[in-house]
Length: 356
Image 1 (cartoon, rainbow, N blue to C red):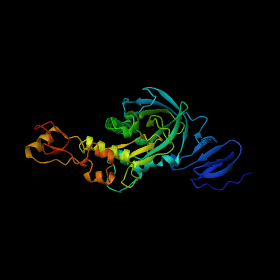
Image 2 (cartoon, rainbow, N blue to C red; image 1 turned 90 degrees about the vertical axis):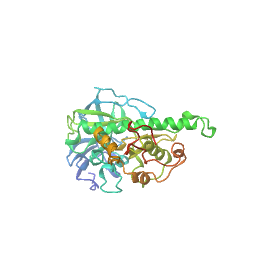
Image 3 (cartoon, helix red, strand yellow; image 1 turned 120 degrees about the vertical axis):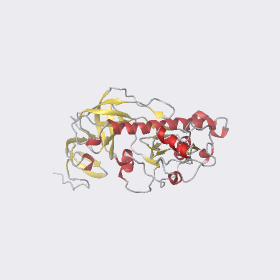
Image 4 (cartoon, rainbow, N blue to C red; image 1 turned 60 degrees about the vertical axis):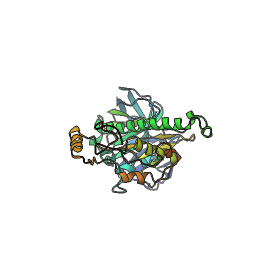
């Protein structure tokens, strides 16, 4: 008989085979590899008869019965996107799920309390999420599921998709700018090879069946990203991450393009060997849309309206300095200083003539 020491996880009963690890804990195993485990990842509910494959450490089950359908796919391809192969109404079978410690930074946005004061506001910041790798049709993707079952709604998923859509639009403009700026500059070589950022385009999927309702119950809506990585790095988050010029310049460019009304926050993903960046699940801080009546009232009184948008001080905190790329589009570092029109802090209102 093999004696197994208690693992440093929630109460677990493990039947093992060969030699392997679980969450970094080595153990001897023999026979069929079965895992029965309860922990916070699945709301303290036990999942039975999970199989840990020796090849990739993935959690599998013979009768997982985890089937989803693509119900939302509004983003189209551009220079700022990494597209998926899924189509609306596609029904997909999740073959296995993998818990990867390297994906934990994706949840930092939802775990932080207080902090710098520049955290994204609204449901995107307070909605706790789980992120796991999932294998579908033999390919690994990223699956995002709200922790609370009542939060697994299409409305919440569409907010995440909207953030990715807007970020991809900014990435398209940024990539076009960097390509244009390197044209004719022999020191940068071929403009088409200039480093770029692309956003993993998510789709919203409805769970059709599931043997693990604690994780995702039938009827729940989840996020699926074409991201196969095992690790995520924060590039712009709280002002304390390592400075990396390309994502920092992208952050600046998005603020500059929006006239200070939007900030692409929580820029995260991976950097490829060729210098390109792949971003996943970004968050956008926005100034609320202004009603026409409020705009006209502000024009009449000659006053400015505080729309409650991204705090200007966050620009300096999240983007402490500019690199050479920034100087190509905003040499005076105006960044979050929105142009003022009609007494409002907006890029343009269309009332009262030209820009200042």
